[in-house]
Image (cartoon, rainbow, N blue to C red):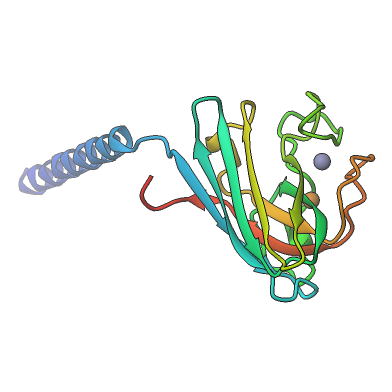
Length: 183
Ligand code: CU
Ligand code: ZN
């Protein structure tokens, strides 16, 4: 009898502990608000030279506003896309995978024209002779929560919007989109 009582007391204790843990987890979940700002810091690939910069994604009134300020970019246009993987581990940038295409359109496009495109197609980012490149566009169809954890890539050449991925060549830099501090 005594052993049995001890066992049931222990079991009851475990149930209370589990219930407390569940309640704590639920509270944490309820307190967590949807992020309103994300950030990606570029890491140059082996061919990326001194390219550097930050890309921010903010929840705007009409969708997600994408802002970039880069330095060390060769003059001219460079394909600029969200890629499938937030993986900057390979020296050629290829671990970032292909264009982010959660809708499965399998169609590359110009975001200023094509409604049907890979969701990650952000067109081009253009650098001046000093190597500075800026970007500021708002996308109504790009949910901030959907792109978290994915990658962003700056390419060697311009995106000419040809199939399948815009002929933008190699990868100069890769960044990982994460939740920003201080939403
Ligand atoms: Cu790309
Ligand atoms: Zn694409």
